[in-house]
Length: 344
Ligand SMILES: [Cu+2]
Image (tube, protein in one colour):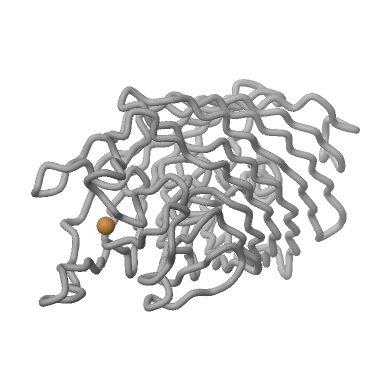
């Protein structure tokens, strides 16, 4: 280590996009790896950084537009064609482990690669007819390696080379189709597209990050656009835009508190070939693309600790302040993230 790694780690919070959303609007970005890039220790010139992340998302309530709906209300939700859903999600947990490696080519160019591993579980209920009524069931967990994301960050502007106070960085990335999007249930049907480990598509990513560093306060504004493409099963997830404002305050040298506000827009998905949702044979709320996408605003308080040289720990809690979804959807109640980073 040539430099004071602690200082680099402290500054690094401001270098990565704060799009920490695996499950913005009910797992819409479940395989987008952006979350692992949030808060990654940005490596110095010729340095390597390694980060391990854990995230947990809980989805257990319904929204129709921006109004909360009970499970009973979801059971009687009338589709545009006049019918109701006979299969509903009740709760979904998403656990994600992500390993991210970063390398600093020089003071301007850095690159990151992250590999996620996911485990999704779901409680459901389905209507079995007049005699049996609604029956609860637990889905077989879906797990596996998710979609690998590579991203290059290039700092296009800074006011001065040493301890810059203003910086503008542009990121270009690609989310690869490494995760499976064709997991099936015991009955041979494709698992919900939004519960699969991967999306099956190769999606370009574009980020713009502006950072301002004051005495013990740092501010960051960033935006990331994910341009989704159609996968081999004919399914296309909606494009997404995440725009965030993050502030970090250093209480003491080793401890910082963070607060973030993020706006997330996710477009509606399209199941062109009806592989995941066939209205003729399937009346599952979770599978109907009409119930995908929407807008949300999130608040994320967090904590960062630098216990020893080259090591950082961060924890973040995320809650939606506002959610407005297309159709009716199972939405997130909260999300927790823990990260451990080491710079070599
Ligand atoms: Cu399910």
